[in-house]
Structures are given as C-alpha cells and as structure tokens.
Image (cartoon, rainbow, N blue to C red):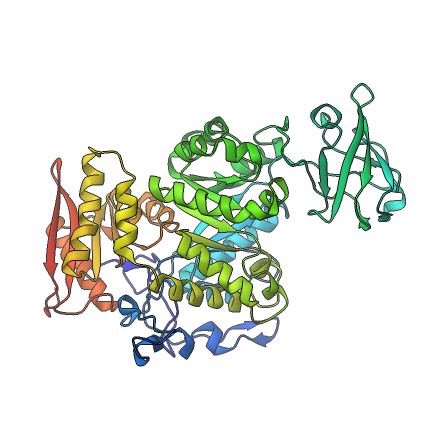
Length: 565
C-alpha cells in the first residue's frame, strides 16, 4: 500500500529493519537478513545490534500480582514497539559510522543531536550523510537536531598554555581584558560587563563548578574585580564560567550561531533547533526571524539554563515548540537542591500546554566508561519518565563513550518499565483539569478520543494528518495506547516526511507517511492493516480513528477484523 510506520525498540532475533520495495522509508520495520555490525574491526554483539534480551520482555506477567516487581505491559507484548518515550542521542567520534548508527536506530534512537559547540560544518556534514545512509538501510526514521553553541562566558588563555593551581583562600584578579595571558593571580574573562554585573559577595563558578570564587570588590572603570578562591583546584585555559543569579548582557544568538543555522541547518533541512541559553520569549521570536521561511518546518526547542529563563518560563513555553531541561548549566545557576524542583515543574508546565519536553544531562553518565549505569542514574531516567518528560537525552554516553549502543538499549529498557508503572487515566484527568473550558474544537476532539480509548480499551489511536496537530494534541492527554499519526503525502516534496520526523519528540506518537491515494476510509483502513502487520493490533481489538470530513472532524471506534484490508 506504499507506507511504513515507526516502532521504537528492538527487533526479533534475526531481524534487521529495511524499507520494502515501493515503501517510503519512514521509521518502519521490515524483515531482512541481519548485516554483521563491525566497528573499528570489532563486531558489535548481536544482542546489542539486533536482538532484545529477556530483561526487555514482559516478564512481569509471570509474577504474582502482589509481587513488588509486578509491572505488566499489555500494550507492548505483541510487537516491536516497546516504549512510548523518545530517546535523543548526541552523535560524536564513536557514533558517526554507519554500522553503529544502524545499531543505535534499532535500539530506539529517534532524534540525533548535532552539538555545534564542537566540530566543523564539514565534520557534521559527514556525520549527517552517514546518519541518512543508516536510516535508508534500516528503514527507520530519525529526526535531526542542531544544538547551537550559544553565548558563553569563558576564562582566558594562560601563560605558556599551562594549567595553574588555585589554592583555597588565595585572592585572584579577574580582568575583562581578554588579551591578558593569566596565571595563578590574574585570570582573563570573556564577559566585558563582569565587573558591572556582579558585586561583593557574588559567587562565580568556573570549569563546570569545580572552582568557586567569591567576589570581594569591583572596579568597573578598570574592568577588574578581586575574588577569593573557596577551594583548591586546577584551572586550564578557556574554561566555562557561570554567574549564578546574575542577569547577563549577552546576545540571544552569536554570529557563529547564525552561520550554523543558515549555512548548515537550513541547507540540510534539519528538523529541530535546540536554542541554547534562551532567557525570554522574545529570544525565540528572534531565532525564528533568523531562520526565515525555513522556520515553518523547523521546530525550536528552547534550552532553559539560568535563573532568568526560569523567571520567564511561561513566556518561553508559549513561544517555543518544545523545551529542554538543560540540567548542566542550570545546575550551576540555581542551588543544587532545587534542580529536581525546577525539572518537575518545568515538565509539568510543558505537559499541561502540550509542548514536548526533553530532560538532558548526565542521565547515564557512568556509561561513558562502563557497560552498566549506576543505580542512581537508572532511577533518574525512570523518574524523568514518571515526571512526564517526552524525551530523554544521551550526551557524552553516545558521543564519546565506550558503550554508545548499549547506552541506548539500557535507556529504552528503563523507559518501557517506567511507562508501565504510569496510571494513564489519572494523568489524563490531571491534564484535563488544567485546561480552560470551553476548549478549542480540535483539542476537545483529541481529549475525547483519549477518553474513548480508555473506555473501550482501545489498543491504538489512529489520526489522519496533514500538519500533525491533531496527533500532537492527542499525545498531550497521554493515552495508554500508542498514537499512529498517518501523514498524507499530497505534494511528494518531502514535506510529509518532515512533519513525521518532527513528531518524533512527542511521547507515544508513531509517525507514518502514506501517498495521497483513495479517500479517508481507504487511508484509515490501510493504517489499521499496517498496524496489524506490525503487531500493534490483532483481530478483535478496538481502534479509535480520527480524521477530517470536509470542514468537520470525525471520531470513530473501529473493530479490527481478520480480513487483509
């Protein structure tokens, strides 16, 4: 019928995804003989590349209902679709070869992050070409996210390029003259307004918070300040610097960011821009203006990384297509004991407004050098899922770690287990209670479809789409079953695939692209048929379908039959 659907998770033993002849390679699974995965002359274990382990199967059904580990997953027991949350993976030196990318896609990578704090355009282009080759080979759709470097404050160069040792209690001079090559007594800083924006008693954090300085005095005219070092630490050249609680005078995006967006992002038709250091809604408007006409097909995910961003969070959510809880810099800008609070409330606000939210930074950090995460990391990922995050992100684990494929596999297992513990009906009621009544017609239909799916025990919700807006609203109400978003390709210019890829940050949505053939009844029947092929539904199951009929929208409950079509 000329369509393919997305199913995150792992394959059956011996299967390798590949687009069928005549099908569009849109995030689907077709059967083909597995290719050996070899990286740097070493084979990737088959269990990691193509085969699910027993840990990922629904072992909870064998346990007594009263057992502490009883956690049945009835929506996942008949298909390759094992979890609804999305995994974003940062690509880097260890994860830019086609075989590794194919293995990561099979384990559940749904969005690839390109970190423009590092690498040239040529380097990222080669990685992107390999990613697209891997997607073509596997038939699995993957979104592309450009993460801007953003404005930053850094320490300067040092004499002879050698790191210096700072002693607890010692005093240092910070100067905004960036031509100065510093030492243990003088350190250059790239922020011209430093002496003006901080005052005695202010804290300054350097090198990812490993060094804490307390400001003693400021000389605004000279552009210098005196500070006391609060701990022993070694300081290298050009280390990052944070000014907790200070409203800094930095641009929304730098000249480098503009070049990265227009000369690489727009030209390569990326799906998402992760905008660093967003502090207010107007920042998002400015980024859209830089993207120009391309902004219509690029979703902006705002990274909230400081106190000012938290102060203006409601405005940022309104203007953004999504939000990233960037716990790295945020953990430097607000007290450590409040990071959990910021995460939970940011996720809650995004959930209530139906905006996808990403939780990032050090989720499985220990897997950069170990094949298993710590217990605390596993619990951190699960709690983010329970909080309501749509996506969880891997950074150094997949960019430079020793176990990039295993990190994706572990993440997918945790996501599936955590989702099974969620009471979908309670979440639905909580989100609904926060909405303004009367609500828009389309959202009313979306929420009603989720309620109907709960009441009839539907195994799937199908939404025929052009823009994907209806499916996004359905996902907002967190149905217990997946949402098959069927994008009708009416133009054959790649825009339908773009809509499908940009849905890969919404929890529960499975994007699927079909050619514009037949009427809505035919398209809906084809979608149900393909869902049956994928094991998402079986004869006798109920499916809730939503589609447009002229200017109206229609919802219906469909009984899956045994017929082929």
